[in-house]
Length: 312
Image (tube, rainbow, N blue to C red; front, side, top):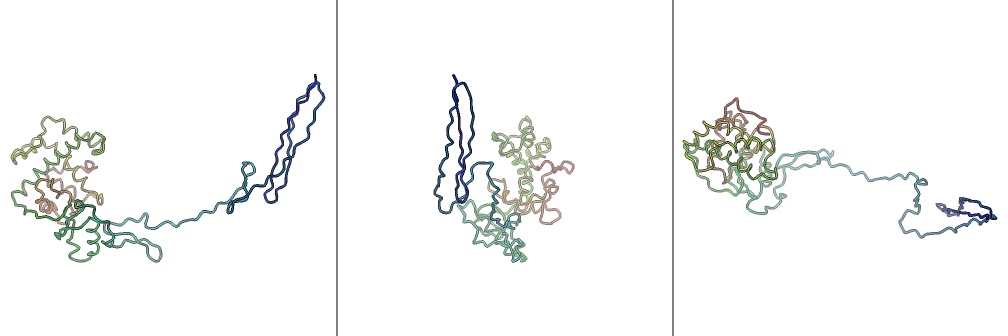
C-alpha cells in the first residue's frame, strides 16, 4: 500500500507600514506505495490589529527580527552636596557655580523634639530642644567670644549641679574606674546577640568576668577601691581605653572635646557634678582637647600600658 502524508507549515508575516502577506511553506514528505496526495499551500489573510493611541506601532516579537532601538534616558545631574560632608550645625548648599559649601543651619529648620529626652543643656546653662538646635545656634555664633565658649554640657534639660569639692575630685577616678569595669561586665552578661560588644572586646572582658579576684559591684569605700586598683591593675586597663573609644565619635580623631564628654554627665554616672572639673584637670596642655595619653594618665594607667589598639 502506498500512502503519501504531507505536512505543510505556512508562516505568514506582516509588513511594518502597509502589511503585505507573505507565504513561507515548509513541506515534509514521507512516501509509501500509495498515490501522492498534494495539498495546496494555505495563505493566511493579513490581520490588522488596532494600535492604542500613544503606543509604538512597530512591535517586533521574534528575536532574529529585532532591530537595535536606541533608548534615550534623561540624565539627572548629581547633586554636588551628596558627597560633601558638613560638621554639626551646618548644611550643604551650592553657589552660583554649582560648587558645594557649608553654611550655618537655621535652628528653625531643625526637627521638633519628640520629648524631653531630646533636650540638651549648653554651657550657657540654657536648655535647647534638640542637639540640632544647639549646634545650629552655636554655628551662628562662630567668631564671637560667646560662641567660642559655648559647648554641649550634657544630655537632658539644664539642672542645678552641686559644686565639686576637692575631696570629691580625688574620689572621682577611683569610682569612675570601678564603674566602667562593672558596665563592661554587665554588657558582657547581656550581649547574647553580639550587638553590644565586638568579638575582640568580648574576649577581653571575658578575662575580667571570669577572674575570681574581681571586685564585685557595690558601694565600696575609697580605701577598698584604691587597694583593688593596685592589686588588680590589669583589670582596669581595657575599661579605661574602651570608654575613650566610646566617646571619641564626632569625629574619630584620637581626641575628646567638651561636647564628646557630654554623655558622662548623665545621672547614671557616679559623681556627675565633678565630671567637668575632672576633665578640665586632665587637659594637661590646656588645648581644650583630651588625648588618649592624657585620659589614661587621669585614671592612673601607666604610660607603657597606653595602647591605641585597645580603643578599636
